[in-house]
Amino acid sequence: MTRVVLSIGSNLGDRLARLQSVVDALGEAVIAVSPVYETDPWGGVDQGPFLNAVVIAEDGRRDAQDWLGFAQDLERAADRVRGQKWGPRSLDVDLVRVEQRAADGSWQDVLSRSDGLTLPHPLTHLRAFVLIPWLDVEPDAQLPITDTDRPVARLLAEIDAVERTGVRPTDLELRR
Image (tube, one colour):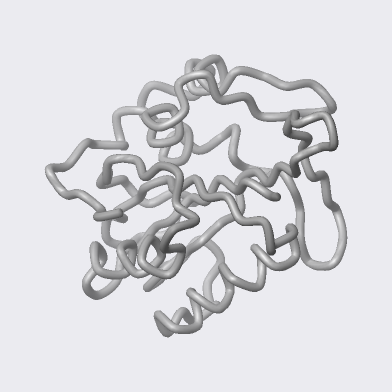
């Protein structure tokens, strides 16, 4: 059994429908879905605002590489074009954290630096648009950074206030 935290975002086309497509594709695997936020673009590229959310899912058939393939398939289905780094995108599905159920029932982080997969996602701790919705669905969330679990709430507090205020709540919802 694996558990994944996915950060999803879109700033092209029907942004909400793009995010909903991820939740729909996950189906019964969905454990939690955050509220939807509108966020300022990140990375210094001039573009329109994003809609962002976090989805947590569990699946006994997927490992970390399977989750990566799943995310890439969803992006392709949304006609994602990989062009400019941090540029506009129809759909972005990032694996923030993947955990695997151990024999004793505990969850253990999957750490990866190979096969095109870096886990946990290397920029998570810098992104208010990931941390804020993640805390909505998992208030005690932890993120392993340099072999130490750090509270996501503390990581968020370390982000510049301007970044945090660029993540605005909406009245939009994703259906489970």
